[in-house]
Every structure is written in C-alpha cells, then in structure tokens.
Amino acid sequence: PEAQRAAAARRIRQRAVAFLSASVVVLLLSAGVHLWGVRRELELVQSRRAAIADAVADAQRARESVNGLRMRLETLAELEEKAPRWTPQFAALAQALPDSAYLQALTADSTGLRLGGLARSASGVVPALQASPRFDRVALAAPLRWDSDDAGERFDVAASLEEPPRSAPSRSTP
Image (cartoon, rainbow, N blue to C red; front, side, top):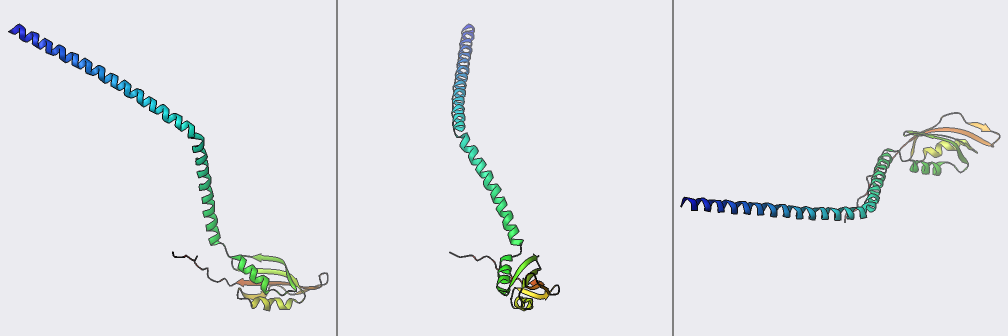
C-alpha cells in the first residue's frame, strides 16, 4: 500500500507538471499570438497615420494661421474700441467749412483739432465751425494773414472735440 500511494502521488505530480507545462506553453502561445495581433494593428495604425500625415499637417498649419489671425483681429478690435472716432469729426469738418475754404494742414489728437488753411474770407471759418455740434471752443490760434500768392486769407484755428457718447452695439433678439 505504501508503494501504491507513492506511485499514485508520483502520477499526480507528473500530471500536475504536465498540466503546468501545457498551461505555460498555451500561455506563451497565446501571448505570442496577442503580440503578433498588436503589432499588426500598430502597423495598420501607423500606415493610416502616414497616409493622412500631410492632411493633418495642413490642418495644423491652418489652425495656427487662424489662431494667429484671431489674435490679430482681437488686437485690432481692442485698438479700435480705444481709438477716437475720427470719421464723424472729418465729415463734420467737411460740412462745416465754407466752400471757399480749404485745409492745408490738420493736426489732431484725442481732445481737439488744429486746422491751417486758406479761404477767400477767413472770418467765416470760426463761426462755421462753432455752428457744428462736433466742435467746441473754436478760436483762432494765430492771426489771419493775407496771402497775395494764393489770393486769400490764411487761417489757423483750434477746436476742441465734442464727441457724442459711444453707443453700445445693437443686439437683435431672435
């Protein structure tokens, strides 16, 4: 009986080693097959990435270009928001000046204008600018001078700007 038990224990150990060996072989085989599949999938992904690499690079360059343009537009919008509105002042100046007067020099800043020009009769320039709602404190900045070469009077006028408050952008509701 002792010999039978020892023989049975040996057979059990042999079967256990055989099952263990078979399990290791199957495990290694399945790991190899899995690795082969992963490598094949990786090669497929790499080939697809290579196929679209130029398109992706173009898209990235376009995105960078758009982002750069967006930043420039934001900067311009900020500068425009802070900048004085000159178009209305120039239009008011063109409407207010007498037809016989024309400008030869214009200096402007955020508070006012300095105009130099020639008119048949410069005495009408100051009252014409004072009549405009865009200009305030209009005055001669230098004496009127007769210019025989141009057959007119030279004027030098300073005016403060009377800028109306900026209106908020209109928003339409759907």
